Length: 102
Image (cartoon, rainbow, N blue to C red; front, side):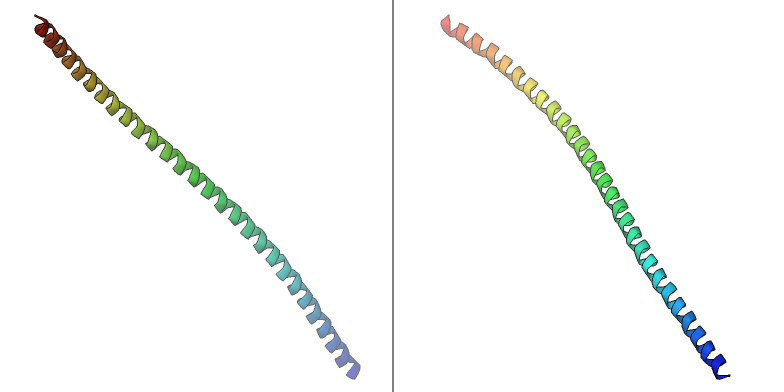
């Protein structure tokens, strides 16, 4: 009877030890999986951030190009107006010189 009890206790201890060993292995496995998941998530988020930055850069370039075209157009208009005024004044200056000679 005593031997059966001792055997039952040893069996229970062995079973408990096996359960603890399996739990330790599971903890290690879960920890490794969590680390891998964190690494993957970090890489995905970094990729998304790079893509977002590239999109923002492209949008900024497009906006700058659009504003530059508007500026160029306005500058061309100003140049044309200045040339027109210069031509008008040139004609008046020529007329004044000619009239002062006669």
